[in-house]
Length: 199
Image 1 (tube, one colour):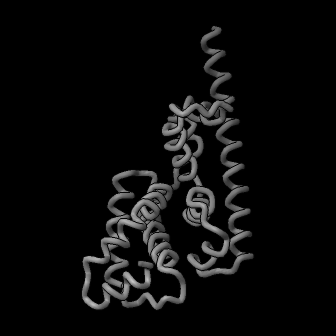
Image 2: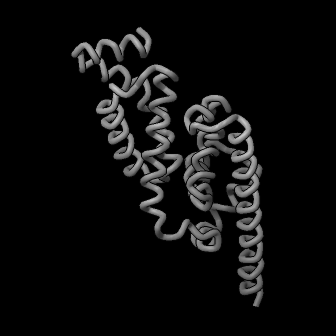
Image 3: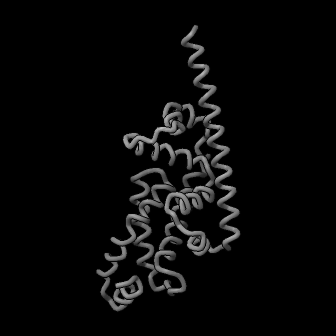
């Protein structure tokens, strides 16, 4: 049974069929929420709110795009709302990140990709993403973490393909600048620590 058929059943009163959609898309929605919010509890709460919101607005789903794109749009907007409320305080400072996570940053830059470091690195990657603006984090998450095609991103964000490509290029450039800054700060910190030990 495809999404449209499930939605038709729900509209006819078989509301328990909504559970099929939740099961099908929960992992994807949760993954996006976690990438954007960098906190498992917040992501879980956001995902629950998103599925409630989608259910309550199901009558507004016209089928112009796929259900997954429509749900993703709700997910993206909900996470942005949370971030904007949260980030009325400043985004994570790059210098503070280096100060608090110096050794972890070094491991992330190391060429080794052993499996036991995977979770550690993933958590740090989320922290590094949090140094970007909400919009930059959103588009990078959609493309790099969730693997959405440009067309899907354009439909989700309601913009042109050219706009998606431009925003993605700017977000990648900013991320590279942030990473360079983190690496440079860590190198300076490392030299100072070594100097102190040598004294």
